[in-house]
Image 1: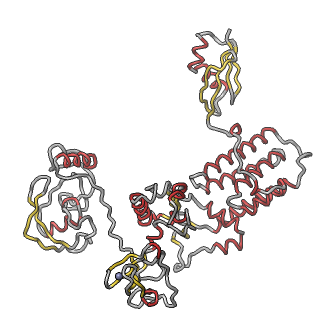
Image 2: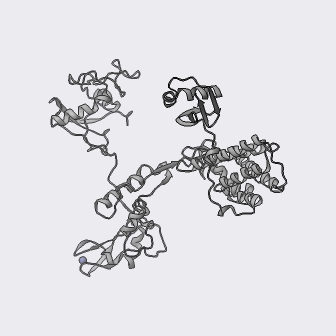
Image 3: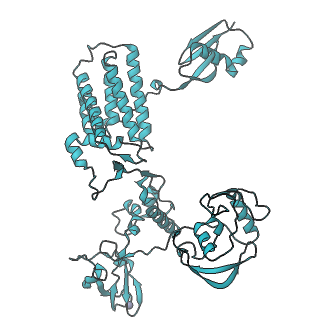
Length: 520
Ligand SMILES: [Zn+2]
């Protein structure tokens, strides 16, 4: 650790620094981590806290090679762990920012035959055997005559024996199952013993997705043709805690299997999504803290629809979010309102109902189309269920706001759309609302598609005509005035060509569509 007094033993020998030929003293020291690289390191006392403390303790030279100040350091501002310009280096590198010079230094080392670029993983060797019952048996037997013998293919898989007592007693739990342990050597037929350790469950999680593709195969782990069809996994979803060991092991397995010719892909997962964690009052939920929210209690009080919709609404799925009881109530009120409005609309007769104000109808239909577009986009790949649900909430707010002015048909369309869009989150209440509105079964309906013409956009393509012939198209702001549209059309390059300098006799502007310039 950094704070402990540094101890070490000088070996009384030196090694040659391959870069500049200087002699460097060699020490054995316990602050160096065995797992780090080969366990033999080149100390850099000016720029590493622990190396600095060691050099101080043993009165070793401390040579600065990067400029920069450590305000908590010594009079020279050392040890300095930040970036900066190189100093006391070779002439061609002095003054260069250290990060920028990295590649050049590597190139130089390679050209001098003194080193090469390499990637090192800070990962230790993996001991896969465990002294527990619940694991995959290691298919190995030990024979006094033949030594370690793998169980042949026709005797695989080795199944776990049924045992009464799973507790280890100084040896693996399986060792107690003597009937199972004592077996015949597959090689010489003599007495042999099975391996009693089981495999680390990381072994199983490293390739279960391959087996899932062909789970009923009793002849082999998988049929390569089937894996060719299914692999790689399109989308992996998991907690960030899997991103280090499990996913690395899984990739390692796949690359090894690909190298061995058992697999056509060497990357198992095409896309990775790591979801956030739901906390309560900022703390991780745990039984020991007693701050766990029971989904059952929420389901009992508000129903499964509200429980599910709230969990999805609580925040961006890739971020942590804090649980709020008020939030559940808010989502519950929204779903209740969706149902109540649907019930009210379904009570009225569309045929005899007033047509409503045309502008209000258009506004509501546009809003519904906006919601279709928004929810579809949010759910597709982004998994942004929270903003998807928020969009349906906006739509329901619009139905409420325009209840007096919009016609029944437009309201019905908006509510049907809201039910369809919320069906994945709240299937029960939306199915009922949809049935009230249409008499149909929501789960039999296709996912709604937005009418592109109804989508309000920030800008649109204005058709520019000269004497009724389309000569150009320009992108204009949706809220551009008639004057701005006319100016944009007049300035369009190909319109200019066809005007040939003539002054327009008349300009017809149709906002949202076109400008027609009439010349003599
Ligand atoms: Zn044998």
